[in-house]
Amino acid sequence: MYIGELTDPKIPATLKKLVYSYPGHLDSADENHLYWKDGSVMVYDDGIKNKPHDEMLDNPDIEDMLSQNYVKGDQWEIPPPENFEPGRIRYEPFFLKMYGNNSAEVRNKLVNVKWTDGSVVKFSKVNGASDSLEKVIKELKQLPSEFDKYLVNPGGTFVWRNIAETSRLSNHSFGTAIDINTKYTDYWQWSKNLKYANRIPIEIVNIFKSTDLSGEGNGIIMINCILSTDRNCYNRLYLQSNFNDFLFLNFSDDSF
Image 1: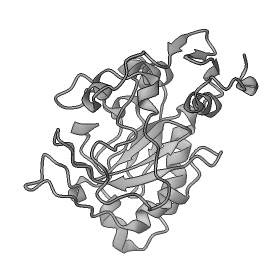
Image 2 (image 1 turned 45 degrees about the vertical axis):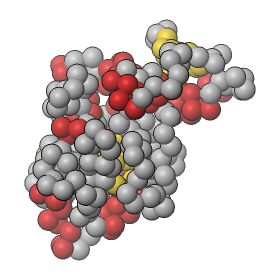
Image 3 (image 1 turned 90 degrees about the horizontal axis):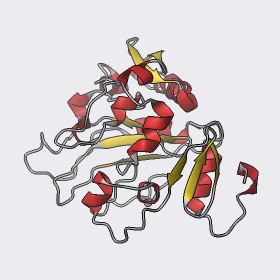
Image 4 (image 1 turned 30 degrees about the horizontal axis):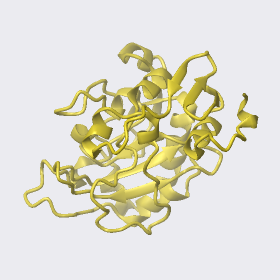
């Protein structure tokens, strides 16, 4: 079965979208398997139903990773529902295979990108992620100077490490994440009251929302703070490059 022949109604819609979004890496799918161009096969649904949210974070399958839909535009709930955090559930083998199995492999796929303040950051070139970031930067630089304080002194990009207090790799490990100025981050471990907060101007959000990150109209953005029972409160801005590549901005990655 080839990409253009994913017509079997038994194939989950999200799995079809995943294949269509990564034509350089993925070959095809059936109702419960994802086939890579190099012959590798990944299971879509591990058969475990009704997983608690924490279990989906720690032991997800591809189905879990794609289980939450992004809210387009600015019509999301404020604050969002508990445990609504698309992008946080990640099937790690998928990212390891695509971006690099270790620090050295990821480093070989990084390129230099000049940020808005002139500093240079490292970012993955896989799937055009670095090109997408440059598009965003170009638009951000057109903003009035009053927005500079949110963009200067970026917190960093590539660091191969686990998310704090977990065994899960941070998205920074793959060179697909950038923290903007953390001075304006309302991170739950820094907060005294754990109430919803956001200090990122909508003008910055709109630039990410209006930028076509994948070349196929798949640039999606959300900004929110999520407060859940496991203390996961974030002030985060993230966007999608292709289908499931995320550029996370303005959060302390202890939670990602």
